[in-house]
Amino acid sequence: MMLSMLPIYKTTKFNYWVRLYVRLHILLVNKGDVIALAIIWDQLIAEMVLLAGIIYFSIYLEQLIYRKSEKKEQKETKTNIVKFIENDLQQRLHFIEESLQYKDYKPFFTDMWDAVILAGKHALLSFELFQSLQRTYSWMKYYNSELEGNKKLDEKILNELLEDVRKSIDRSLFKLKESKFGDKSENHETVQNTLQTNSFKKYLGFWL
Image 1 (cartoon, rainbow, N blue to C red):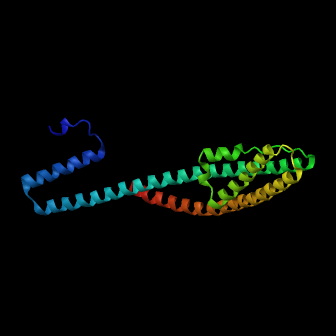
Image 2 (cartoon, helix red, strand yellow):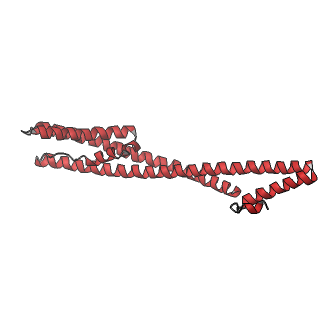
Image 3 (tube, helix red, strand yellow):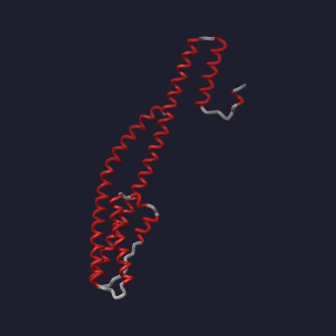
């Protein structure tokens, strides 16, 4: 009668606990069998501990998978940013060559780096790489300000500034290549961690 009042609980685990409670209640009231009662309590405690362990490891595994997914997404974003910036700096080098060759001095476009800063994606870069890129684009902006303020266009000063910009770009490109090499080393660690995670999944799957 009591069980029929609880139609919402129809899961197998709940029915199992109800049946166990009924068995315990019958033994306690009708038989008073202390040995049987102790055995049931031992079984109850063991299964509760096992259930708690399964729940704990399930939550741990879910968080681990989430962190792996988040880390993978951040790594893909970082890879794309590095590619875009590297391509942008290569274009700036061609721009410098054309400016020096044809004496056609025009301002640099720094919208790519500005977009990275505004989106907050620079936090994905290492401090050394960020510092190098920030210095490089600062040189470009300084050249732009000198170009706008220099009405007579002193070619000597502009050429020296362009050389400084080119040197800074070369250093940044070197840092970008170092960053790519570092990502390859991280890939090896990621593969090892993935293998360990899969082994853990198989072990946990045995209990689930």
